[in-house]
Image (tube, rainbow, N blue to C red; front, side, top):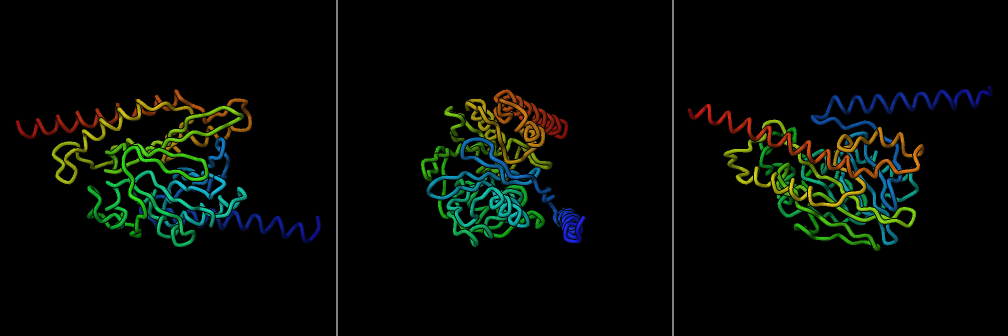
Length: 299
């Protein structure tokens, strides 16, 4: 082994150690885990994964520029940028920035991305006040400073059923509120080997700890919104199942199979149905729990 090769191997080990150390440090310092770097890859067609091992971000490449979905935490932005560049694309070509919903783990990096790319930021109407206040007007986390993030100006206000178009790609915004008042499930079509596939990116059906589903003064219709969101997701046709968090759709497991299987593992309509059914069960379990607690209290 030459001296040059020796030092090259040593530097790779040092670089890996520093990367892991920085990730660990960030996870300890931030209220919300930043996630670990994950290899960027093409999901199908012009759709790419550029997020961490849990906080999902997606790049949609078009001839007129690119669309980025989810800015994640502010500390994740360099990871997202690095992933985009590793795929051979320019971060500066990001023309449109979208999010799944207005929580810091999906939207805290938006201001920084806007500054670096000049992308147009598009958010569902019901989440715009939260984004532009940096989380201070959130129905649940308004008094939790650990959930605040850089306030960011929204360039286009979206409504249920609106489409976002760029370079021949069309995304549809479905309002699936409950988790936040303006939570979005995105759908789009991609072409793979001459065949069209319907992509569904679930915003979230999760009922966070502490959410009041009954007598919620800051979100009176929360339970009805969750029920509506469940109906919407049940009505959507899904071929490729994705979401705001990698754990929704078993990212690690499917990525490991990506180059080993003839069938794209992300084509998972049954996994989508199972996820929605599981979240529906969790919602109604929590609702009944809160109803029972209220009945006992008033008895």
